[in-house]
View 1 (cartoon, one colour):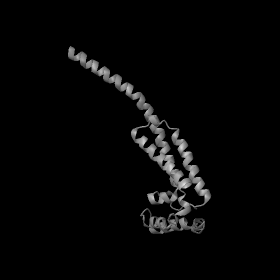
View 2 (cartoon, helix red, strand yellow):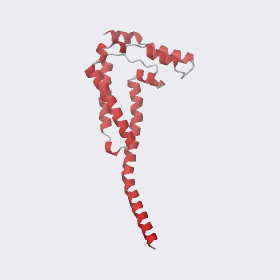
View 3 (tube, rainbow, N blue to C red):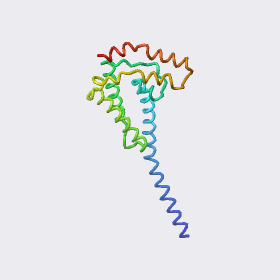
View 4 (tube, rainbow, N blue to C red):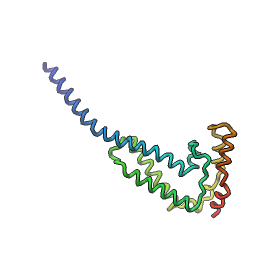
Length: 171
């Protein structure tokens, strides 16, 4: 009988602790679910905002896009990063899972880095090596995501505004 009472007490303690643990887990699940949806929206928007990064990462949806490096584009990059930082900060960080907390910090660091490189470091003003379409062209042609004729067509679309790209780069 003693053994049964001890076992019963252990089961009750275990059940209560599991019940209490489930309540915060439900909140984490809700926060994590919302955060995962945010990540999915963010990553596509990030690739759209940065089509050359998308090309290097193998995200083909924006292979035919060429962002003209003008003051409007740089201001748009800063605005994009600040808007997503604001959205990111709306998440209850303490309720996120450890993995999502890591993702949160990665996104936060990337967005802050984008702002800093554009507005403070101003790499676009002094580093001409950033204005080279050769690497993007290489990636578009050599990644085996489609038959060669389709890749050539994508490359043609990508380079359609190369003149405007290099005109802005010279400024």
